[in-house]
Length: 141
Image (cartoon, rainbow, N blue to C red; front, side, top):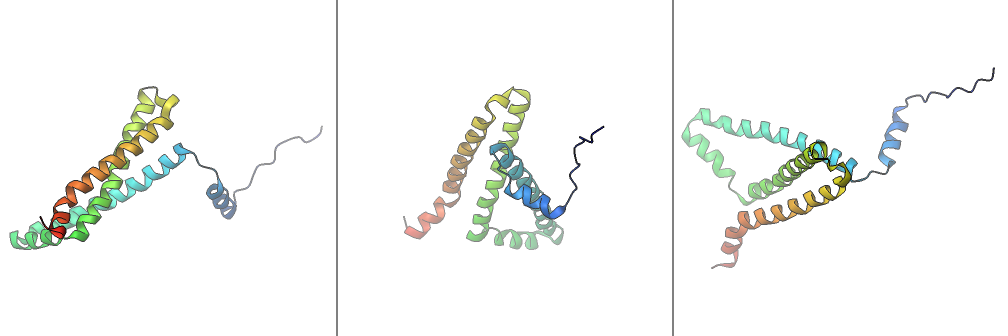
């Protein structure tokens, strides 16, 4: 009897990493990757947020001085960047629900594009809201 069995591929970590990095990813793969990255970043932000609120235990003056440092233009820019993570994670989560529950698998790529467009519009609108008073201060009015 000839041995026509399939050879089992051995796991080699270096080759596995090379294969997965070079693998052609479509929008669904990227959505999955970005969803995980933004989720981890938001968990990190949650811990940072809880830490910054811990100054409440030091009294009103300590808390207000800490909060004053968060109103600087640098922190406002960082909050605006945080919005990228929040928007992507939330809009992609809505897309996932639509794909899973509303028979959206047929048009998941369209939903992905719509979520990006909506996210960019919301991101720019929030940037205008957050920084319009700073821009007016710079150019005087």
